[in-house]
Length: 139
Length: 366
Image (cartoon, rainbow over all chains, first blue to last red; front, side, top):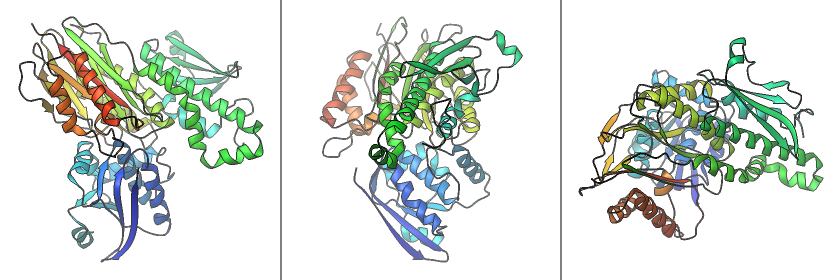
């Protein structure tokens, strides 16, 4: 499935890396998106905004990407999303406890994508902004 | 090949990852792996008490000879879901052993081409396992007087993680347990998590106060014991056949659809909580619906609505509802057949990227 990602740097009061996902996130590409994030973290990126304005579809496999991206950005190992569930639980608990500010935030989430994220409860893990400008101002 | 134990033909790290969810199962069920000589490779040693437990053994074969043995012990171990899960695990281990045996013998050139994506190589080996997976998932539905039960399951090209089950629960009135679930993600990890979760949900539903409690128990096991970044959406229910009352609990799954026999709008039964394996507790609420004579309840996985046409369009929920609307005069079997043929026609020969599962429970009209 065709999906494109672009990466930009925005300097707000913190340096923000904006990753734009265009197309459909599903079983055919969900691992690749995580692969795109890994070098960003290794290069020192600590504030990642996922701009989903042009993401028209997300499958349940796509949810694994979002979840794994969150983990990678917390510096959790191992980075392969098929492994390391325990680390993710810690992230989830920490978020539940209000201990950490999520390193990954979302913006421009379209209604169909939002419905899937909310139905599965993953909206608990991410701060969701209406658009990029708001996200950059409030990150 | 590094990390290959000469006495056991499966890569050690791979083995530990696969077995981790199976070796520390709660509720008294343990799974241990032995080599051909009966030495324990993985899993906790059986304690003295457990010697009286029921035990299920499955030999592991590669190239026609036994290289190991899986042993499951504990109450309920001989039920068919546990046996099926053990078989799924055994098949996965056998495929890995085959892959491990072939690699050293392969030519350097073959090894070089195989090396870059070992994971997809294993997935290719496991393609054979699809047949086994189909046999695990497509269990025969029980007979329930006054009801029609129908289902359809089509696995994706790559191993997926849908599963469903309809079974009579061993309690007063023999209620019908209903489970439909989808492991997010693909490949060996998804298939194994499916094989692992299925009997847990089944036994949790039997043991729990209700469907929400069953999912909470399952979630606790997944959160505490399973180490993978995959997770599961699940919709479970308990139907009392006499009254038609259905109590549902939904962990992040597509909502059930209630199709009234008397006519009127199809009701999408919303409500629930987060998917299994990510958060604890789930704080699920239960939803009660009543199947009156002539009513049907349809459960499905996102493989139906996410199905793609050759032009890239998705089947979607509106089309699903239209399909059910057109077929609503028929039986539960007719409904499932209608959804199945609409989805297949829509896909128009494109391959199935996700498992497709449809279940319908219909109460006979009086």
